[in-house]
Image (cartoon, rainbow, N blue to C red):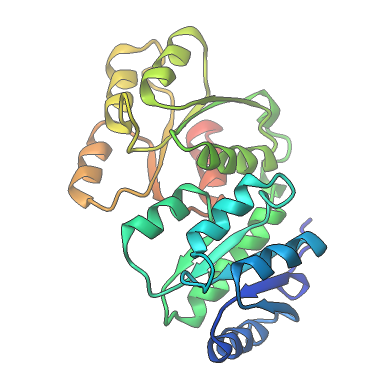
Length: 267
């Protein structure tokens, strides 16, 4: 049974504008959040995180001393901060800033302005990440499942691994690209493959096609988690035989649903 609720979350809001601090804080309180701390710079936010570990960091993209991208990358490089969930609220749309965030496994990327429902969903996603609902996976052989994660981003692999482990998966193998993933597929058995799309050596589409056409595990479920924005390329990937596809950032519920339906055969 889940014990964490939205009103119990402790949130660190990193926002240089005092006006935006008031607006976002008011929205959070409207949704039930009580414990909100604020910082105006990345440096001060990192110092506060060292003093107390928030349940969620919500940040703007452009701070006076660093970008939100640099803030989350700094967090991921620090073992004591790496597991803190991060959410971006920004009007920034440039892929140069957003792609590293998506790869880092952030909870959500919300536009500015955002709809209150978007913020509410992101808070529920945070709760799911901190304490996944595993009730309907009880009595299932989750610990016996073997999963292969294929992604060139170490932070992205770590994020997917943590979500899988939160649902009880223990046997997890990681590969940094499709070519390396094929080596594992040819020498071991897996119940699920989770792959990125854009990777060096061999991308997710080529990797999926190889599994479906040339491997001994042609029917293994494949979940693609990607930040690829080109719908035509994604349509081609879907034709290659993936079981499911979702965007980065993704909700933990997506992993759970794939485990239930594609792997365990549950409704």
